Image (cartoon, rainbow, N blue to C red; front, side, top):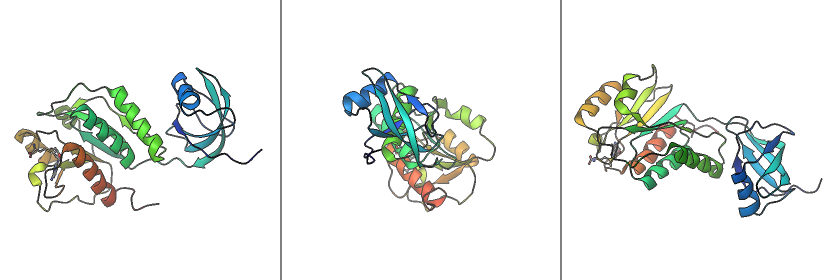
Length: 243
Ligand code: SAM
C-alpha cells in the first residue's frame, strides 16, 4: 500500500459502515465525486451514515452514473447530540434554510417546523430541508444528521406534549428581562416564533407549560434567535463543555 492520500470529501451515505464494507453510490453521489470533485479509483473519502461513526473509505469503482466505495478504517466514533429539538415557525425560504443548516451545525437532534397563529411562510419542502441538514453535517464534521420533521401545528404539538421534555420558550416580550435558562437535566425543546411573534393566547399557554427565556435586550430576527437560543442551551445544558 502506498502513502495515505488526503481526504477531500465527506459524504453521508444510507448504508451500513464497517471494516471492508462495500458502499454502492447513488447516481448523484457518483456525479459529485467523479464529475464535480474529479476523484477516481484509489482516492480516499470520508463517509458516515448517522449511526456507525465516520470511516475512511477508498473508491474501488468509478463510473459516470455509479460507483463503489470500500471502508478501510474507522476515523471517528459515532457522536450523537443531546436530546434537543429545535422548533421554529418557518419564515422566508432562504432564512428557513439558514435555520435548518445552523441547527444541524449547532447540534440539535431534531428540527421541527411549527405552524403558529402568526406563521406566514411559503410552502415547506421537507425533503429539501432534510438535504440541507445532511449537507451541513457533511461540512461541519458531524456524524449525526438531525431529522427534519413535517410541519406540525403548534397547538396540536402542545396538546400531545411528551412527558418530561422541558420547553425553552423564547419569548420576545421578555427582551431585556433577566430571565435565563434553568439548569434542568433531561430532554428539551427550544421554541422560536415567527416574524410576527406569538399571539397572546399562545403566550399564555406557553408560559404555563414551559420556561420562558429572554435572548437579551434586543428583538432578534427569528434566524438569529434560533442560533442564539441554541448557543445558550448548548453552553448551559449541552455538549459544549464536554470533549
Ligand atoms: N414581532 C415580534 C415583536 O416585535 O416583538 C418579534 C418576533 S422575533 C422577530 C421572532 C422570534 O424570535 C420571537 O418570537 C422569539 O421566539 C425570538 N426572539 C427574538 N428576540 C428575542 C428576545 N430578545 N428574547 C426572547 N426571544 C426572542
